[in-house]
Image (cartoon, rainbow, N blue to C red; front, top):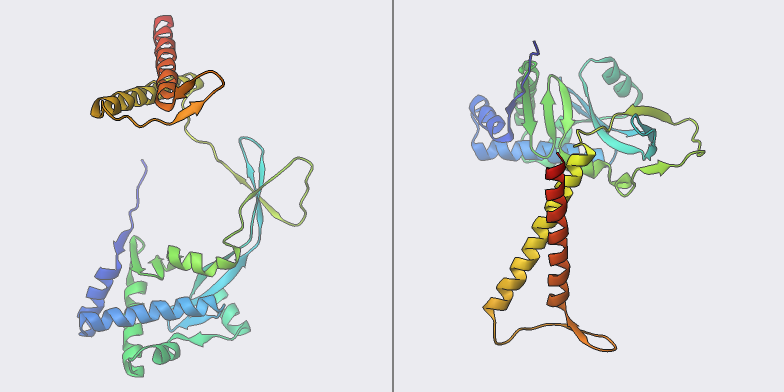
Length: 274
């Protein structure tokens, strides 16, 4: 039996309501504080700064090296470009201690003091209550902060806007197909499964024929409707040939009719042979 675990999300609005209740602040006051925090962290990450959230963890950026993805089904190799990602490390974890010990870092309290109109005491209380909400969430709970990301079981998934912002230097790079004989050294390779649940070739062929018939019918129906709607003044573009003129609608009608007949005949033939 498979046990499915669903994440119960506390969205940004629900988080604001919870903070409002616990802090006894106004809804607008809490919203401004939360937005100021998200903006401050995002701005500092764009500067490749390390931001320490007291008693919770730290935010930083990491550069992920380029990798080669090998399609298990086809054997094709794709070189994926490097990327800059927003990362979070929980307080007192080995990574947290290593990063803080080896790098300069900024304290979120001090940054918010300069960014917002909150007093140091208000910031301290605000961050303490927010930290408690995030850390007290159990394994199936998520806490989402707009424009920043989602905390789930003390891990962090950055918001899409934050992902795009920090990775801007590499945003214009795309995966490149590596041809046979092209060897790349010192780049990690990973096996990927790109298999999709595709229809059998026969079903796909029949589907394509059906689609062609439907599209052809639409062209004919549209052409007929246009002709009926304006019997007196029909606007047509004329293509000049050496001997005669052929109207655009006439060519389309002819092609569409041929497609419809061919597709219908093939579909009927398939049904008879089953």
